Length: 507
Image 1 (cartoon, rainbow, N blue to C red):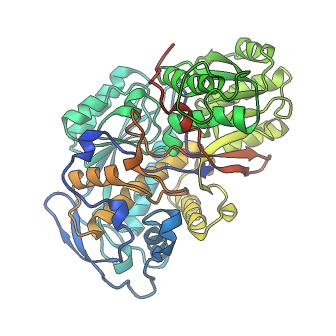
Image 2: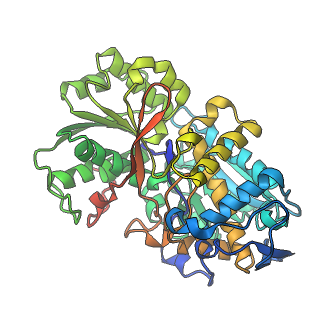
Image 3: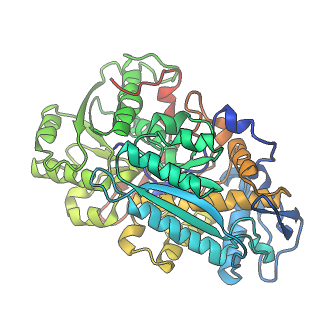
């Protein structure tokens, strides 16, 4: 599977949907209102949320939001800093009937299994419920919102399981559904028929990129930002003229390779026309794609083919185990990062596995999201990013996520997804509206220059056609030094390479 997870420099948040979501019931953008002062008293609503009046004074010991940082760090950044800081000394516990959020995730299948995505999502829900007041509350004034109930469904990597999970979750009448990642995209019509929005953690299919009422929250726009970004970094950032692209031979892997790796390289070479300023700028560029099945027991034939191509750079994205199978085979056949740069997406991040590789892993490049480094709080450039990354590491440990799981790319995604829901829900209530599925859906669709955890601002209303469910295309490029990730490019964007092109989901 070709994916991109939140790497170590993290960018993500809500993605815009198509015309269906943008024509939802009228709502003030959550992103446009999160800079408001702390909310006042809370009143319950029949639609499953709460409403407040703005202008209340923070409780003793808590400070009002510093909205001066919103211009550069995203609308709502100041509010989030104030809330997280206040909760450290004056936590607020959620009360009342729970708000059900569905969670659909691949688990228990060697072709794709990501339990860490769910584990950190649940730990984040526990943090939100116990310390941040649930959904629709107000930490600064001590007002409790309602608790989240995470309704999970694990699925094998087959289309029937995807549909089964969607039908199961719809039966529980969720407020919204998180699709952690899904290889098929066949679940969207089920949610659309029930008028339930879907928040995608890692967009990897055409449906993830283009469906109405779908919000692809994933870092760098999932495959769209990560894969275009890493191939552009290989060709433009490193100046490679011969690029090998092993790719994960799964249904989403086919889409991500042909549309978001091969096509951007063809644009740079001039074989495909596009509107990017870089189109046709590297006519001597040569590429080779090599399909690799997930859980492949022996990558020797594929790696031999790659090395015989004599590449200047190698680019790869897959589930973690497949990434390290590739690295081990490359290493066994004489490769080192110093000889041929290897650029991986955040889906491959596993700190324990990298340390186990020893010197062989030093110098490998990774995609992350533009902005901050979630695994190393002290390295972040702003107090806001330091606080958010510190909160992730501290709270995941506090709520019983295993240390090895905390440092995986998809683990950070689980935190990000649930914190985004919390932030947007509280902003809706703070603006004076009721928190309902409709106001939540409309608020996400309208976000622009919005705060994103660990990251630079994003904007759902700015999604490019035809990729209308994507609004976070920027990534970061980091490099593993044997102990941690060092930022090489804090903001890098390859999405220009698909501008003016047609979707190419296969050969």
